[in-house]
Image (cartoon, rainbow, N blue to C red; front, top):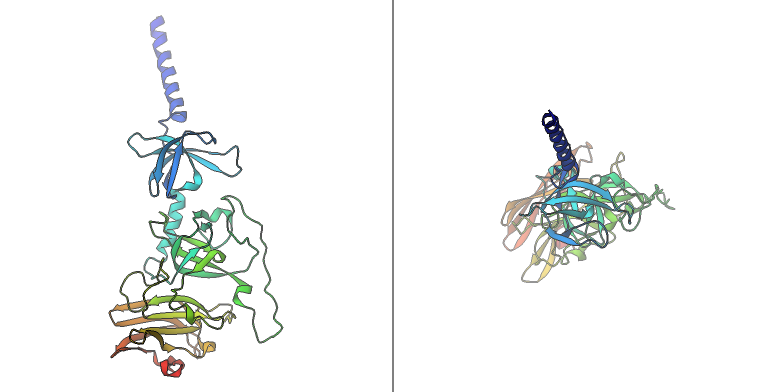
Length: 377
């Protein structure tokens, strides 16, 4: 009788102990998965300063998240207890800033879906480490992760956001927000001169990241941290405060038509969209560009010449994206422009071709009056 009583009790104790092991021990199931975003990072024995390194992981490595804690030494610093997918299934602790969770990664992938069929509009890099965000605002819940200083990217879209006080560097830790307040645009002494664009708005860029830079493919970056990478051979043509908004190569069939990561491209042919700094909104909507410029390089004279340009920016109200299509010397580029008579936004297609050794552009008939070729310069 005593044996019969002892066996069920022993089984109950064993089941309870196994349950505790499932909750607390190394065989606990993952609560989430994560992907390493840092170039390299260490899984450590603990989250204390004196903890030892267990395993080096690299960008795009997958990890199972088993638990998380906030550092007792640094407020807001989160550590994940993880299991690696190496042969030993190493378990230890890694700083949260070195990985991106599956849910956060999905937000980035959803953003990339918005422009999957759209060509890049420009190239840029960030001047200092900055937060990549799911939305174009400073809310802490929108932080995806911190992008390292000097990261290159393609600019796919941008958005004008009413200007707010913000730090020169968007470096608030995840979960914290630096104070800010709305900034009223400066008034102008001349009623005919509207406030400058940069006095009214902050620019936010939706960017696409190369897999070598980040496993997260897309996100929003605060524009004050972005340096547009205008190719050096055409940057000279930015004149009278008019800034290039987008540019694409016309004499190349490669995917990299905006020169990402390379400001010193060989001279060639370009279509450029630009705008001056003075805002001219219609019904509260800002134009993306008010100027079109087509440039070509004469390899014999070793100089650029203007193939086609608009001369009256007051009648040009354009919206992106810019699309370049075609092969070899025969290309077209398409943009969307407002019809001054009807107010409708219409798609306009320009034909680019070679006439002997000179490049030519045939614009749509209704905007041909804005043309100025190289003989007018």
